[in-house]
Figure 1: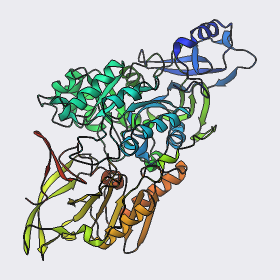
Figure 2: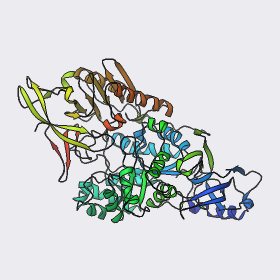
Figure 3: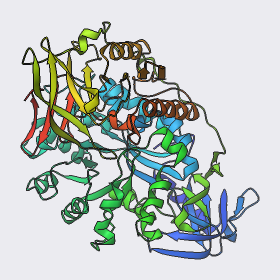
Figure 4: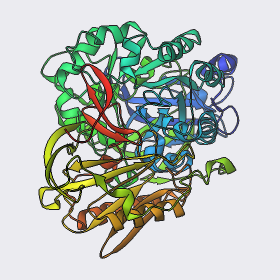
Length: 605
């Protein structure tokens, strides 16, 4: 962890000072009196409690902490408010908020999130270990208890299915895990078929992680009753967020895995998955609440982990249990319950005060590493900004101008109709459906009918590695007018992706994104909406408030074009993610994920 500005030093180094401060020989720097303590260890709410901290860590918890108070001790009278551990996000990609780590911290700290486990595989697919390194160092500069995972999925499967900007294998994993204790483990292992069938790269990455004494996270999208889930678990992968049903949770927990239940901006899985507990009666100790991920506009308008905890409570989970699933369970999953996840002596003083009913999760104050960092929904402090390296910019290497001809789909017949595969979007879910559709053909060119809710999709390699591209069809976008959206946010390889129903507009939008060196452009006959993302082509270097405003503008432009999808941009950004069923498009072609594996299939049936 960061050992400078925020005092997050290893516990072993703090023991003499902690014990002396707990005795009262050294005085606390902060005391919080008169709280209703949410004890996530015992599952109790204890009234009339007080908490004393010295520096970044808690030294004493009890009804009377007067012996720890000195002349310089800052005293907060909570007036009977609840005190709970700071909330932890057990699976998050900071880049998916389109913000840097600094602005992400500014966005979530007032909402009660004091730490998280961040898989920086988005920037890693663009810049490799260099991208991961600057994400880690910037996260260390913030008050967050930020733990980083080294990306397992660069690329997410193998180079034959997509082109990325970098490569990470077992040697790179071992190197990254040596950077510090806050390099906590291996990010989601998306190439689950590779693990199951013994791919050397994937098995080597897991072994490098286990050899370092770290954790490996999972991403398994075959059915929960598939015989290969126990095979996957046998590899050492012991946590998975690809749970969309109660059965998914049950099977993972029974195998000793941690089941992560997500409530992101565009995928809403908690209501279904939490039934493993509320209806199935399973113990929640291996269940976690996560985001994976929430957009900047969702953070502004709804919240972060506070929103997820509140939502779980609304599904019938007891409030203390819901808090456990976003604090101590998460800490225990990563072997960090000594440091985070509970208000106990010795732990980091990451504490939130909550007003009103606990079920409302109304955070009024956030304390991180023993400092009051946010009050009443606003940051109360600032810190020196991390300077991003030059390598983070100018990463879009398209090397040519797009034309309308780039979007012409050659058909297998000269005239009439042709049967083709289309990617059908499923609102509020990560999965897609493979649909077979009939498209009109004229002069050997396929002409999908917008009246049948069909759009074209193109993915162009943008990392300067050949410039190939592939074309496909998408169903369910809903454009009611001539429109196109282009973006370099296209998980996980983040190539330039363009979706639309007009070839000229598609070329224009794609060229504008390349000119901006990354970002999102929504273009209709009525005008253009831009969202520049200069950092790796996937993040903005602007403040949280600006990022949220620009994100909202893209959402509004999509809506005005006729796209009704909730958080449409985040949903569209996943259409190139080739490891989630049923079908996706990469720069190499149309990729189908089935029970048999992952392969490229022709567009026309």
